[in-house]
Amino acid sequence: MTLTAPPPARADALRRGLASWLPGRRWFAGKGRPFLGPQILHRTPLAAAVPGAAWRAEVLVVRVSHSQVEAPDHYLVPVAMRHSLPPGLEDSLIARDERCVVYDALADPQIVRDLVDGLLKTRPGQGEVAFRRGGAVGDTGLPLGEARVLSGEQSNTSVVLGDEVVLKVFRRLRQGENPESEVLRLLTEAGQPHVPPLLGDFEGPLGEGRATYGILQRFLPDAADGWALALAGAGGAPAPAGGAGPGDGFPAEAFRLGEAVAAVHRTLAEAAPTTRLSREDLRAAGERMRARLEAAVRLSPGLRTIAPSLAAAFAGLAASGPGVLAQRLHGDLHLGQTLRTRTGWSLIDFEGEPDSPLAHRRALHPVAKDIAGMLRSFDYAAHHGLLRAEPPAAERRDLQEAARAWAARSQEAFCEGYARAAGADPREHGALLRAYLVDKAVYELVYEIRNRPGWASLPMRALERLSRGAGTGGSPL
Ligand SMILES: Nc1ncnc2c1ncn2[C@@H]1O[C@H](COP(=O)(O)OP(=O)(O)O)[C@@H](O)[C@H]1O
Ligand SMILES: O=P(O)(O)O[C@H]1O[C@H](CO)[C@@H](O[C@H]2O[C@H](CO)[C@@H](O)[C@H](O)[C@H]2O)[C@H](O)[C@H]1O
Image 1 (tube, protein in one colour):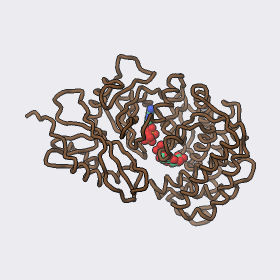
Image 2: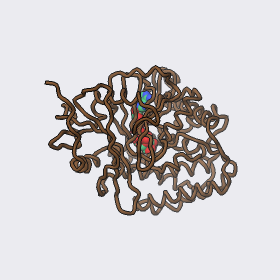
Image 3: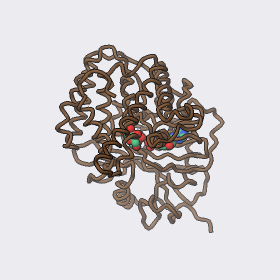
Image 4: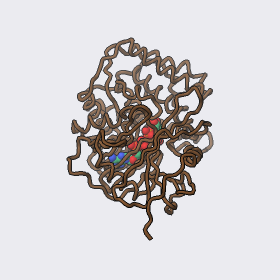
């Protein structure tokens, strides 16, 4: 018997299903908070590349409001509808009515490949959801192999097609072009070797405007994740094959990573506008950091006692100018955004901080913002092993000292690599770096409380340490 696609699910069944399915998603930002709705803002049918398929697919844009006064969040949920749920996809089931079962289309390899095949044939201005090619592919099309969903601690959903291409679907939408496609396009067109090339992006409706729904990028099949390498390094493992050399350990890799980040920064400074910050600009940046800190204190009252000394670091920002260069950046740089291939380091995920407004992510910032992100990440990797361990107090102190020393070695090596490639050492601007380090740790604290409460002690400890030295001159490392 040949099956045809079922009729589309009823809107009320979809809404009810989404209300219970969404809060369990890793990428759902409102965990633990009640919400109104959800409301389905757009329901766009997607054409399958192969006619006569036994399924149908739609892209849903779902609006979630946590209160009448806060701005709502918008989530992208591509759904598949079939007569029955394919085996193994129970966790992806969203809704069921008398017509069909509805589930997360990105969890179904067959559907993802077929949908991408169909979307690749669209062009901007044609159809509701459309594909725009990047600078790195000709008109002959892309080789699309088997689809496999990447799992892990992610803000979005990525699917690898063959070992060639990765499709990243943005889960939280904002109107306008996502900074990731914008920045990757610049870097790809400039031939920057430390970034996998952008192949194209998808866009579709969001309210009255449009939004980037996803990107297609070259996949690096043999790459090792920088976060995993750093965790292994912090635990005493040697550097990876093809690395800086046996016995050099992770700090030697950190040096090369510093060089790679400096090279990407240089390309961005050449390819996009830059500006020199006045004292007033720096003071305003310090004010924004202070507002972030105040919001964090409301969420985590334990911060209250150290908040004044942390704020002193932001006040120091104005003293570091005028004339600091601001430019387009990565925006949320950490070890989880770095990949180590046989030939060197690559940077991915140029979306910026997923919890920050788009205007802030698009704005020009000093490179210290990215550098601070990476320096904080070495600290995370060093202390991660202590999260669950509960050794006696004396042993714990030793472990903490060892972790701090490892982090400091990696941080220094990263700055040396950066300085070698950029010709300017980030440690020379101590007040600037300190302000961005504190701001990043504040962002992380909020991020962890909302997403991984068990990890919140990592940025909290760092803030306590930074508060003891905040506002002072010299290196903040
Ligand atoms: N071009 C790529 N090549 C190889 N692996 C990749 C590539 N892009 C992403 N990945 C893998 O997918 C993971 C998630 O990608 P990322 O862009 O960081 O998504 P998110 O925004 O969800 O955090 C990465 O940590 C990496 O392991
Ligand atoms: O990678 P994303 O764009 O989703 O970034 C968000 O999530 C990150 C965690 O997955 C978070 O990074 C923090 O944890 C990392 C270890 O998991 C650590 O390496 C980073 O230094 C730390 O900031 C990131 O802040 C957040 O925006």
